[in-house]
Length: 342
Image (tube, rainbow, N blue to C red; front, side, top):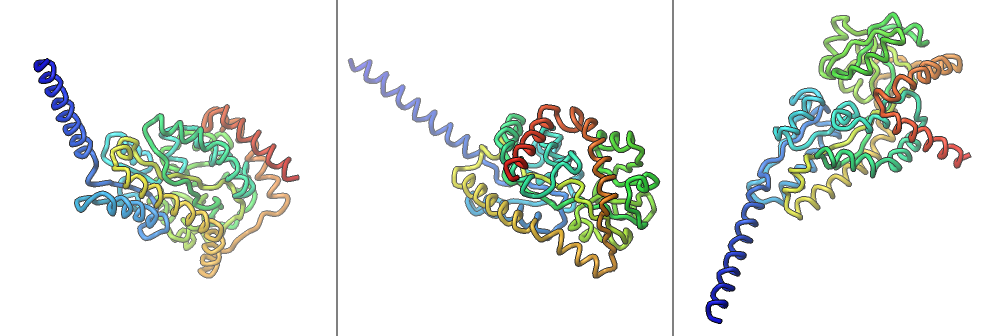
């Protein structure tokens, strides 16, 4: 009996030591430095959102905890930051659909379908329908979504006063670096894309490498593209959609209080970005008009021509830039939404 009791005590001590070792290992795995990246400019609302998340992590993770936010594309293109996250050089990144598609192409349905969405309300409705599925797919690839956000509607900034889609075929048009499929679709329709990182747009405009920049007004204003592209075609081509993602390995290693704080800061940032989205396009356009920008509204004829170009691109987008099943689901969700509103 004594032998049995001694054996039980040894087993109990062994489990206690194992528990202490395991707890110590878990604490050691918790990161002391979280590194985040964004192509957004330093000081912008997007940069500040990441800073707030970093501060929430630091505040709840001990005196040694630090967070660094790399803005202004310092860590490279969005594809570069995704690669850096995969190998553990970065922990989180604020990405547009361009970068998110490097993780899972289904997210492209929120942005890569020209003139599919007619309002923020339509985009919000579709995203909420797809969000559980999209977040599950990103999680399966090792990433947790912290923030869903938008960067405005893409308008066309041009050096010359041009309006109709046929006129754009003589121009050199900026396209996102690394987005080979987008360039392929543009070329198939007779346009001339020039693939560049966002940080290279202004030098490209100055040297004549590009003449047209499809970009959201806030980005045009911050980048001062309007000082060279003096005209803007108001078209609402596609919404700029994105998300901030963190490596699941990093997120899981945070202590529970830090995880709660990071998610709380992310929810607050989501609300702030949503409120900002409602006014940022108009404020940016007015500021650029004060600097001499001329805004051209689409005539009914021009709108029909652009919509024909967009719809001609949909079959090429479906199954290449956007998975066919997801593309079809977006169209179905939108049709039901518009029918219900009628």
